[in-house]
Length: 462
Image 1 (cartoon, rainbow, N blue to C red):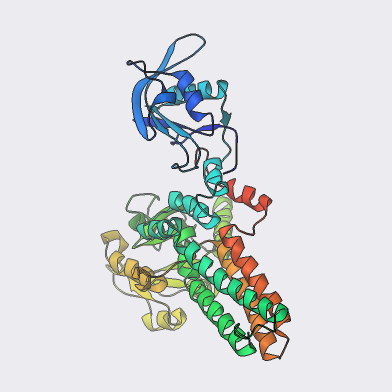
Image 2 (tube, helix red, strand yellow):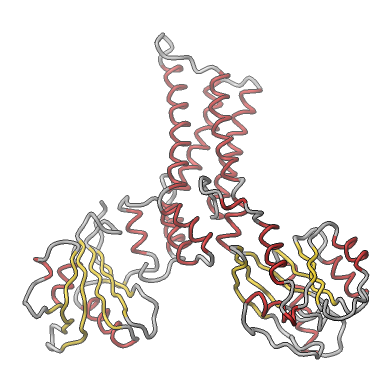
């Protein structure tokens, strides 16, 4: 275990609440807390058993003034999150009380923790690997139950175990090659022939491909889909946002051009996290403010992962509608024909042709009809029920996906070399490269600057 100084930070969100926690970690964590803690029974934190909690007060050692009424948890290394001594001071939630406790901890020997430094210490002290550390932030940011389950599996080491097995297979293969090269006289060692080497490489590639096959769904769960709602003015875009968000988030009127700027809302649609973006109706307009909103709508559309195109069932298809279909050509989209409570004037045959096989949902958003069908279409489009399997290891992190793709390319290069008749000792260079790339996922072969960059994304106190 690496030796560090003692750090402290507030580990709960700032604001009013029942409880706030100040966490300390390091060799002097218990001693610093002991300087501040006073128990009615006179017990000292330095003398209490590990993994126990104690009632008392935090007192300013200089003035003797009582600062807070607290419960203090003492957890001694190595059975802690950081594998260091950890103390958690549970005080009343509020801006003033928790900051006074933190300030006393800092004055009495602790250092303010950097973002993610507790988790970073858990990684550096060998309690978790880098992929598990990254899963911590995924768990915190999870917007759906499915996303949380994927993060929990990664925290428990599911991905780490599989990566470790692949690296071990490559390492054993490389070792076998080295033995054959250095000690050809050993008759009891199986010769590493091109055929055997190819079998090992194909196995590794197959496992990497299996992981990458989950990447699209995993990334959706982790990052959500930037979903842009587009349509002409007054077709029901804001009503759609309100229906999916289950609250009146956007202003709805019969006046075209009511929405003049982009409105964003994060929603969970049957396990699919959507970052809904309600845009200004796209049309030609002389209104300066509305024109700015329309231009922003066009820019958001270019960056969208997914589009909900809303049409008005009560009006004939217009040139502006057809231009919108042209703008979303090649994009994932669902077409919503709204206002079905009014007489149909929409040419549905033309809509089906323009949709080009993409789902079409009819709805009356005013009367909350068609929402279930739309939510099902969204879930079917991206998951289709496939994510329910609990035996798969999902890859959701962009860094992991990029490294897996590079590792697969290295294995492909090794296989190409075998097919071309290259010597086994040259083929192993590409396999070693794959081994190193897989090691970057779990942090075995990663550089220090990348580690600092990754943990800087964490919040303070985690």
